[in-house]
Image 1 (cartoon, rainbow, N blue to C red):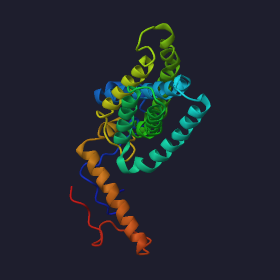
Image 2 (cartoon, rainbow, N blue to C red; image 1 turned 45 degrees about the horizontal axis):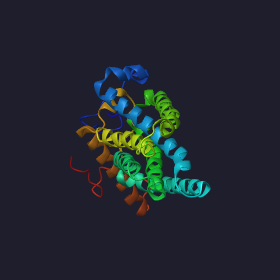
Image 3 (cartoon, rainbow, N blue to C red; image 1 turned 180 degrees about the vertical axis):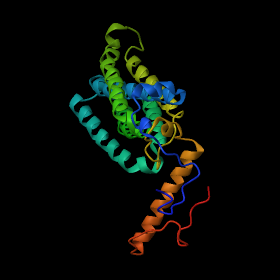
Image 4 (cartoon, one colour; image 1 turned 120 degrees about the vertical axis):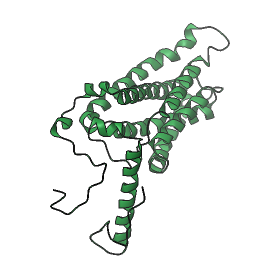
Length: 259
């Protein structure tokens, strides 16, 4: 087909056969690379579910009016989603998720005051919004739906455990019993942020169709594909600005980037 259309294919171009399109989710476990990423993703969902619902349920333990505190939590959560919408394409999924979880862990370990609690809820809300995009872009198309479903299961397990962690204050009597739940939430979310550093960045990367393509995320081949996508989008934008209906990437006006 490429020869008939007089198109020169990239040297790293590979054509997936029909067998690759029928891959099952359990086949991901055979790959050490994907196995490590899946475990990190599952733990991230677990930590986000625990931190998000744990901080929300802990609002009754904060000082001041409980209704005002809950209103502030809802307000900052809305603000967090706006932040994620604006910054996720600029900073990237990996940096967004890592920074939000580390900040959530740092604020949760501090003294329990309303301002830090709201900041922690904001950060974990940003992580909740970004992990959806990040997970979908890390998994191949053949296993994306099942992988998202399993991730949601781990998130619900984390949210189910959060009330029991909040109830530790009733079963442990010590001078640190009131901050013990926040310490647990903070350590769990901070560890999730550190583990996220081991995942590849998926910003401007093509969605992987097969397990082999998913394994190449974060490799020099993936970086090359990202640069080609950015280059193509820039050429399309320049061509639209000049009123051109068709953009020729091989033309003199738009030279291919050096790789």
